[in-house]
Length: 232
Image (cartoon, rainbow, N blue to C red; front, side, top):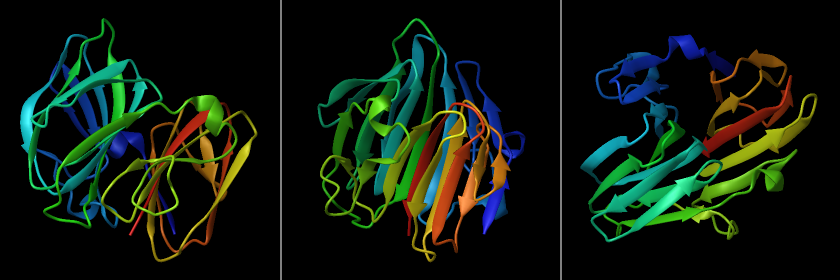
């Protein structure tokens, strides 16, 4: 099954400093048919105005992955971590027993990002944070694992969930294939240009929910960037 979630059907909240689209129910957006996708609980498409951001707030027992698309985000947390994550790069926070964090756009331009939450498989774990650069050239034409809870994905950032966050960049007409476990839940979003997922067209920033498939073949109609989560 491939279900397209058009961008204009997503939840929307514009707070001035934050213009957010919600793929799944979040905050004041509640849609019973979109409470998550498997273990994927949140996928927010955020635009954060220059010199603004999220003040300190708490989380627990959730795996939070941030994929920066444009600009940069600066992280601070109650564990003493601080770091700046730029466009194309990724940060992860395993909230575990509890952590307070802030996410600020300290740049002079807007920052756009995906914030993705995956339900943890290790409740009560020690909280942690990490970030890593992932050059887009390294994922040209194929998927690269950005964050993972699986053994063998040593180059990826670690999360406490049986899930993978992956990225690919495709030029016009290029395709990327990925073998899947049909019992799992995959969610992906394309950026830049339309894509075709097993022949089904999705426009930029549409959500694509996949299950029951043994493989996805993604074709870029124009130059495109894809972020994908494979979860239980």
